[in-house]
Length: 395
Image (cartoon, rainbow, N blue to C red):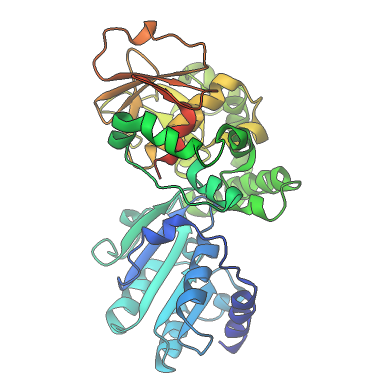
């Protein structure tokens, strides 16, 4: 345990608390058992280390560990937690729980046996508590952490604070809200940079090597996370890569499942499983028609990459695709987004959105109640025309 403490304090010393994710304010840190899942690279580890550094002195009361550490090949998580607790520890952060066998059972026992110990754990976005062996659903408060919103990116780049808004607020007051933001900065001056490299906080480390790191992140999801979580044989990873590559060069992809099966050599049933895994891993976004969610075995209406940074990393950067991918990713964090029978998107079973460039007309949504035109390359909209960048202010 002493070695783990030393490694933690090294991380503690290196942790910068200047660039803080707003997502940290979403979490109620007073809960006894908190779970945070999210895609690789979205900043889960950094956020937890920042929380510890801001709230705990390096005096043994708090400890951060990663359960993929070699220490846990011969030592149990429960035993470490018990030792830490007996020494007066009160806050234990466990990273990468999905790498540790039987983590849920031991987590349940720690929770039940050490009632004055707070535990925060993180895991892959593939993690589903209802699939865990122990019943943590009654004990753990779970959060899903997305990557940076355009609003957060603007805050990092300009040093200014921008308030988030709900979709209803955006629709009702978008002109006023846009005027407020554009009186401080020129949002479109930052928009292309966000689309290219602003979703993952590690862009702050080195923009020049960002896409190399992102490519390595994608490979780690395919070769490590999915194989461990879903017990996919390593020999079959080539099929997952092939599937992702085909979709990356075709998005927004309207899947013909039979044709896709023939191109990839993946059976139809396995195809549905693989699409679900890539979606859970946040490499893809599956857009279904109303009433047929991501857990459904129905064919998705459209398939998008998980965010626009992935488009520039894996795809061809098609502008129409980039716009729709941005809208979907930013909006779906706090809203229910489905395919629209008349336009691009139906949100919260009420609002219809058509996404396009500044020359896009409203002909396609004419006569549809609660319909809106979302335009790229405009700073301020009016009426039912809303700037695309503003949907980046929703979280």
